[in-house]
Length: 288
Image (cartoon, rainbow, N blue to C red; front, side):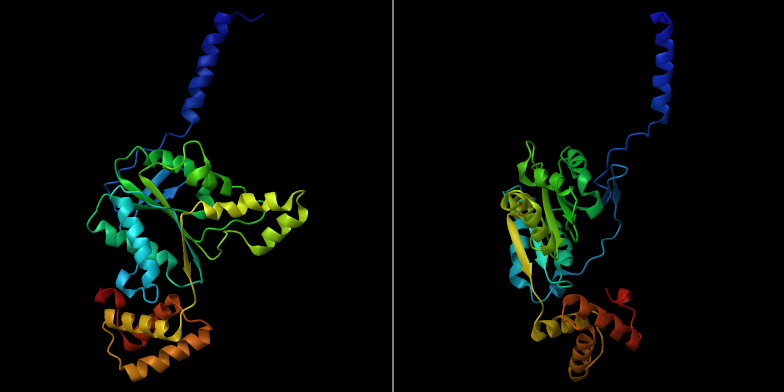
């Protein structure tokens, strides 16, 4: 039998070698470095964003009521008052993610302790680890996931569901979760139908996934823009960027652009302005 005293040095050398092979723990995030960060689940770290890609709040037309609701909710949270997690769902290109970023910028003007943290859809299963680090900070955080949805056999929604409300610990008091999605229930209709068709108890099988959206206290719907709203967006962009074009030229050009795209939305309006500015020889970045 091998002597115990001889084994101890060997085991210690193995343990030391494993320690050297293990990756060093991520350094604590310095949230004073920027106003916004991106969470990287693979390294368990936050990357500072030097300049956030966002549209000024005044350019988001046709969503005044929705904008007001999210602003009020964000302000209450930043002030330490009760506030709800928010799901912004609906039509593509209507300013869901733009509103989240604009709301953060607007509130942070007077409450600079509010930070924005983006988590990518593929990192949702690491959300508990992200929140564990954020809860150690005295600052307040909007954790934001753009284009959130779940497909068949995807179980990462369970991490989000537990964090939002159902887990023992729940979300930290200094964190609120905002998500955007094209789907009201965060899952495709065929997935719901398939769950019902194959389950022993169809109602219970579907309920677990559909109930995820119920964890969001705010449901803010975004719908396709009317022609008047679309033109208001185009005019607002043209004014903001100081484009020298008459309204009787701007309007028919913008409507033709929307017709070729088969849609009227804030994104289509922005793309039209990009094209128009290029034709006019205007550098948009220089006009901010």
